[in-house]
Structures are given as structure tokens and as C-alpha cells.
Image (cartoon, rainbow, N blue to C red; front, side, top):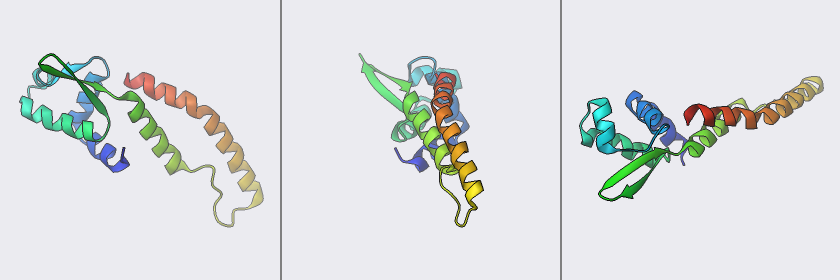
Length: 126
């Protein structure tokens, strides 16, 4: 899953709302269209972008296709991005030893809390 695709998909308020609905239950395109008062083709375009970003999965059941949130992908992407941006484990160039030690200790604390943070993210999105 490419990070740019994920953030591009999340940049749209209707797509974020679709993800919120899909975090609760699997829905078809027509189910979503009724909730949003949007046409089915418009919802399909949003779902295509979300699926291409790896944020939703689909399964055919009879003549309908149902979509659901891919919570693990979303949580892993956001957690990975947060750790990449924070980069608390890497010392700065010419960083004093005392500050470097404090940064490593802080890094260990954050990494231990990473699982709890990921659990909270997954719980909050479904």
C-alpha cells in the first residue's frame, strides 16, 4: 500500500465517512448511496479509490458486492507514518551524548506504547 494513495483517499470527507460506515458493517454500493444521497456511480468511484489504497476490501455475495473496512491496513499505515515522522530513535547529527541518551530512552518508551496506540487506533476505527 502506497502512503500517498492512502492519504489521497483520506483527503476526501465523503471517503472518510464511507470508512466510518464500513467500520461498523459491510455495505453494498447501493446501501452507501442511500446513506449519502449520492448516485451509485459516485459511490463506486469513491470505493474504487479506497480499494486501490488498500483501505477497503470487497466480496461478492450473490449479485451484490459488499465492502468492508480493512482496519489492519489503515492502522498499520497510520502507525508506520507516525513512527516515520517522529523518528525518535535516530539521533540528530552532532547531538550531545546526554540528549542522545534521553532520546533513546524516550524512543524505548514510545515503542513499548506503540502496541497500545495501535490497539486504540484499531478499536476506534472498528
